[in-house]
Length: 364
Image 1 (cartoon, rainbow, N blue to C red):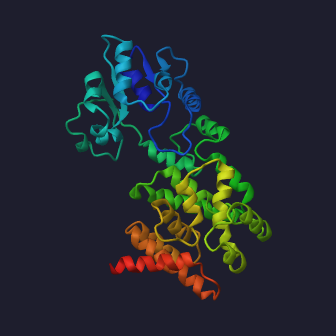
Image 2: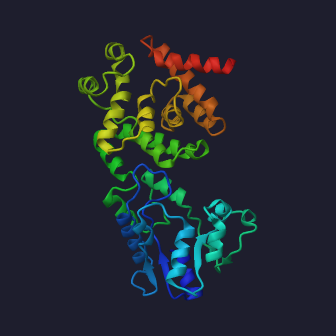
């Protein structure tokens, strides 16, 4: 909104268009629908004092195509809508570094001049060879990926107006619905651990190429069945996950482990999210298994290394995860196995198989 307000003051354009997309380009589990994004945009415009100004318009062009629309297409649309007019594309300087990776970026430059608000912390050398016009002044850093990551965890980014945050909560966007449901079924301590697991997962996810929303959802939901009473957990597990590996032995020797497989089923019921990677991450967060996918490995580590864990190895694994995630994964398996064997009870064969596979890989 600061960029738009500055553009209105400095250029006094005939029109400035806000163009919500039909779908976001992010690989979200549950993208915010166009109607919801439009409502949040109107709330932001109203809070910024821009709603109702005749030159400020909300376009449904991209939504009308009912697909992901690329910037070059949007620029072409507005050039056709305003033939002969000078067209600008407004953006923050944080986007300049990756501009040459955009689809048909040269076509964008042929159709519009980039109008850029300079934000701190971005190396302008990365934009060498990309012509643009800079807005006067400096603007706060507001990377959309950072804002979304904070929203997934229930944060209240100061860059967003209170009216926008209220709209997000009211509509259950950005996992706010899931967080509210978990608060009802988990103890405060369990919910805090789930939130800490999700926060650690979100902070590690970018380096691993994992979408932030998937990391947050899996972290928040991984213990959703953990506080079921023992009898209820066994009953639910018999009904929903009787094919879990070594189910009969788990039921007899270590029924608490059933919460992982039961949790994957319950998470789908609570959230409506049907995603194989999230299911795997929840199912295997306690035991691990050979051949785990990236998200499952992430939650396995973060469950053990979450900040609230009161054993010293948690902090060591957490620190290691930011420097060498593969080493942290191996260390997490070692710690979990050590605690399991020290208890003198039955140890799930999947955990042992994971250890053996990691040792073989290490030797190879």
